[in-house]
Length: 279
Length: 312
Image (cartoon, rainbow over the protein chains, first blue to last red):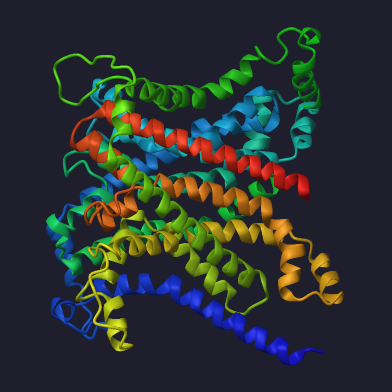
């Protein structure tokens, strides 16, 4: 009945959506464009969106200027270990908090919420002193410990949701069939939880891969530092930066988390939706 | 499961009637919980308490003399530290300045993504980018955009004849707004996804009924959509506010707190105090003040939320 106003509204909606798409995409496209520009074009007073003579020089130079490979290795080690340890210790606890709605699960939920409000500086000073006593400053092991505790709240939250999605009747049925508690957990619950555990681990992986503050404080020497910390070395003193290699290195550092995130995005948004409903 | 649920809930009202040792001492439960509980206690709760204790000492890095208890001296000093309160004011400005536009923009995008539009998948795919990017890379990327000579922002402004462009991140007046824009960009996807989740739980029939009754778009939003997403909206904006107030990496990379402290968030201030000047006790006191203020703000927010709950 109101086709004309309906059409105008549609056009407005598409125009708005287009603005959003540009706002989301253009900054990243500029990073990519800068990464592939030869030095001459970067020095030009009229920069253009598309490099006229795209080059890989910036990437080569980036690897020459900073220990990127070593840093990526450190990041990978820290993120993999943190993710593995996190899910291994969080899954059993999430199981308990999901199945027994007692004081413990209430405390766990409360802690998950409260831990989001800490300014990290209040935690990192005492941790720094403790890790120093244990000779774990400037070591990946110390950083991994911190990352595990840091990603635990969210991991617990995600995993508790996944456990709730497994019907307890299945476990009861296994118990009726004579399977012990451990047997039930391993052969009935665990396989059903596996996708959720993988998603949680990947999320913990990205969080650790992207983390900067703890790494900045705890890692002192370049050969120990993770990728985000090494990236800031490109900025140099007084903010003078070699734009091309900086963009190239930043672009490379993003790729792993973009790929992993693309894989699990649906699960995270699903988990968020579930969490929002329960709120 | 129902049995343990019953005993757990009755445990509060009639603790004496509980069968002895059924739940609390169940060794299997503890075996499952301890692997996570011990690190939480040692590396999270412990340091938090230790941090509060440190705020009452003169702890410093690299000092041979032993640490002394100084009572509330750090807090008294903080009270007179105009630089700290300036950074606090900037932190609040930044947190509000990011959270509010972020919420409005994210709500708009969530509404668009919830409507049946054609490019939805593209927007969803693109929304991953700011979310998945390391904050350090986001900062670097925007420094490339804001770059006075080689950046695209000034070039675009020149093309549109909107002035000669400027050095956004080092200008006294432009630095904070420039940094806030980056904060909005970086945090929009999470907010959008949370709001979208809320929208998708809105009963579609209500919408259609309201439309049949002749309610316009704005009225439908106010009477149907907003009440449905209000809990999510309040939760996500409270979280965003806290996260933003405590943020570090983004601004550290963009301006390192400059120019002249115009973007020095409380976390940057505390970081410098602790790890550049080694004043652990003093920095811990700053952390305590930040926690206290957040706790008060949250309490006010929750009180408002409960009141809002009575209305609906």
